[in-house]
View 1 (tube, rainbow, N blue to C red):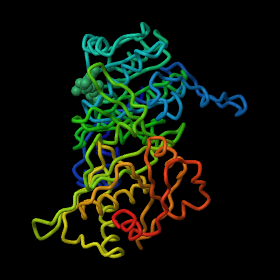
View 2: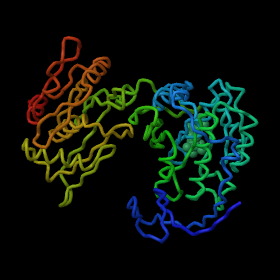
View 3: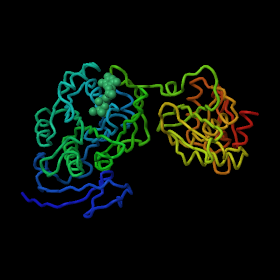
View 4: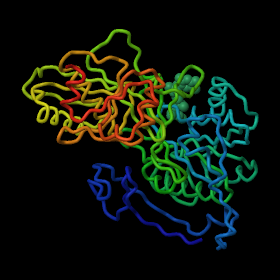
Length: 452
Ligand code: TYD
Ligand code: MG
């Protein structure tokens, strides 16, 4: 067995490898992410261990595995995976500790009528059983293995022959083929590559759970992005009950899908009508609130934008946005100032997308502008109005994609008016909807329409 040893420096954030120490990663630009690792590679054993030989195959004989998908019990999970779990795929589920990654995958395993191997390096079997009792067991074929050594895992895998493998978490795995502690860049790369080989050789889908920490103190999922087929991110505020599962990358479907779950006492529950969930319940009308008809992936969703405009207490006004790009907000404020004559330069402006949602759909622009104007004038907007358009630098209201889907969703939810770009209104048949479609041309027009 050939061995060689060298010292290398890795970036903990992106996995960039360098022969020298660095303060700022030359690849991703992050500071203080350098970590020193000794790498001993014992070459050329892994494939033999798996018991598979590589070989060239005529293309017409290759079966189309992409079409073979396992339909999972959670519709929201199927959605973010692009319509089910593809055989032989490696799926990374990333998220901060405590967000519910283990719960999500254990629940999926317990409800899916297949043989599952759940490998945990984090919790004991008893702990997992306790969690399983909490969420309710329905699958007798879910096997729990507490193991971190990949060679052992492979042995169990061959013995059990599961239909789906879940690894909780990639940071706890260690491969005997490289000489580094678990959780280091070297180990994460190696063990993920081994899991990928396993998935591809046996055509069994593998889920990898990966922790992300805000300060990047654990070498994390970014290193894996190019190895795995699909990256899902589980996010949400621990103070809110609900969680968002977002597709970051997907070789087998759209990368802009979104699934919504709610965490309660007996595990996660899917939220199938997110719009109703995301609109805050309010009886009285308050100023500074506007509803946007957005698209998240293939799905239309109505979300609430909230703005607070107040006179700056100090010389420099404060501007802050949660769930929305701050630079984009500043641009919209500049447009209002310059093109519509609203004096906002001495005002503090706070913007928030309700429910901890984060969105970069340009169609939010109009709703943000409406919320800011409403708060500035302290005049509420009717809570059955909604908005869907992009705002350009000259204050013009621009068209957005899939306008019919947005209008239809707003219509379905009982909204009475939707404000869109006049360019979107062309070729639209408003007779199809109950909702009144109001085309607007500029931000000035919008202000006149709303507040006279
Ligand atoms: P967990 O799946 O352990 O998170 P992760 O694997 O991402 O670290 O979820 C832990 C949190 O979820 C914990 O704060 C308790 C909460 N929880 C519930 O609220 N209800 C439940 O039924 C379960 C199992 C967990
Ligand atoms: Mg966990």
